[in-house]
Image (cartoon, rainbow, N blue to C red; front, side):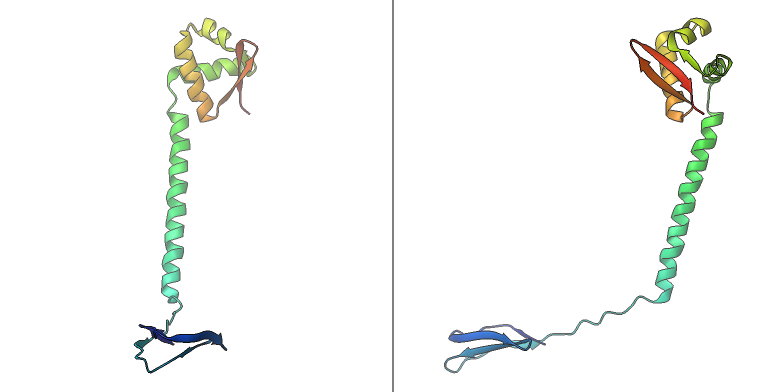
Length: 140
């Protein structure tokens, strides 16, 4: 292909015919042009694909390890009060009012609420608001 660097000043007509630009102009003119380099697209070498595959496998493995460590730490990362709350819920059938836990375990309301929220985030319990009270339920 050709790339025009300058256009003639006295263009009479310009149109495309069969993917060719035709310019008709009056009087002698000087036109500057250059030949366009054709783009040669090469398919990536098979080795490049293997790098992407290996990279993907490494990323999946790292994510799997992180998920495993987070779940493993959750179980062992419970403090004694968290375990006591879970045991209390098991003994009481898995569904108890928050105030009952507070009174029976003799835990301040705010402290209990922080532990309940943590256990809920870890997926051990659910908090259901019923009227003006919270019902704490063990998850299956």
